[in-house]
Length: 237
Ligand SMILES: [Mg+2]
Image (tube, rainbow, N blue to C red; front, side):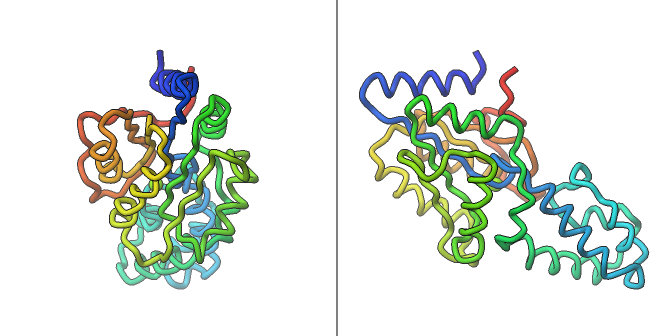
C-alpha cells in the first residue's frame, strides 16, 4: 500500500472511531508548483531588454521546467555572471513572487487536488499551513486554491497564513503548531517541501507520518531526518 493510501486509511479509521484526523499541508512546492510563477516573473524581467545583459532578453522564452529554487539560476545558465544584474533580477522577483497577483500562475503538483479532496471526503480536516503572508497574498491564495479545486470554504478546512511577511518561516510554523493542536484532532500526516519544517513537524507529532516533498527547496536547507517519507508528487500509481 502506498503511503498516501495508508494515510487515507488512517483518516477513515479515525472517523470510524469518532475522531477527526488532521492532515497538514504546506502550499508552495508542496501542493502547488512555484515554477510557473518563477518563469512568468523571469519572462517579465526579460522585457527590460538585453542592454543590461544579453542573457536578460533570452529569458523571454524561459519555461517553467527550467526553474529551480533560484530564478537567477536561469539567468546564470544564459551566461550572466554579473552579480549586480543577478541581484537586480532577485529584487525584481521578490516584489512579484510575494504578491497575490502572481498566484494566478499557480498549478497543482500532480495529484495534489485529488489527494487533498480524498482526505476531506474521508472525513479528515485539511489544514493548509503556508508561509504566504496574509496581507499581500491572502486574497490571491484564496482565489488560487478555489480556482484549482482544492477543498475550501467549508467545514474541516483551515487556511493558516503568516500574519506578516517579515516573520521568519520556521518561527511562524513553530508558533502555528499551537493552533494546529487546538483542534483536538489527531494529526495523522504532514506534507512539506522544506526539510527543516518537516523535521519540526516530525518532532511535534511523533505518531504521524511526515512527508518531505521532493520538489525543490533552498540549497542551504536543513538535512532531512531519516524518519521522513519522501515523495515527489501525489500520484498514486
Ligand atoms: Mg513550501
